[in-house]
Image (cartoon, helix red, strand yellow):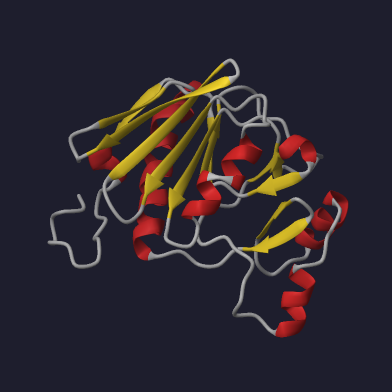
Length: 210
């Protein structure tokens, strides 16, 4: 997710609050009125900050391509703002992209927290990579409906894919604009050229990103 962390650039009083332990119910109550989105894991509320242009472009590209392919089949694709319950109800995340091809199930009558994602995609940045690879992936693995987890790098043309096989997750990776990302959880494919369309990496030639 875009630069998810305990923020160090907020006032000291707010930083103390960020280190306070909250129950899931307290987090959800606070989140309803929060000015900015926050994630929650292990009792901690984790502030989210803005994304780079490259990160935003990748998220928009992936969300648009998946929506065009999956909407005719009745699947739903959400970008950035759909919260997902993780860690057996003890955590909440905002994936960059999330898709579900069954009937979407929500925590309550307000469709703000998805319970049954099939596919989660996170776009890596310098500040979020370690969290996306470790704690966040561990939390997502507790979601029974989730069968595929994808990490897309916003700094280079590189995609990693993890597919659930029983108790194990099988890894594969793709790189280069001519490669194809197969998403078995939702039954479609996307080329890396589509994923990185119009993405301009800092210092790269104008046509390198798409």
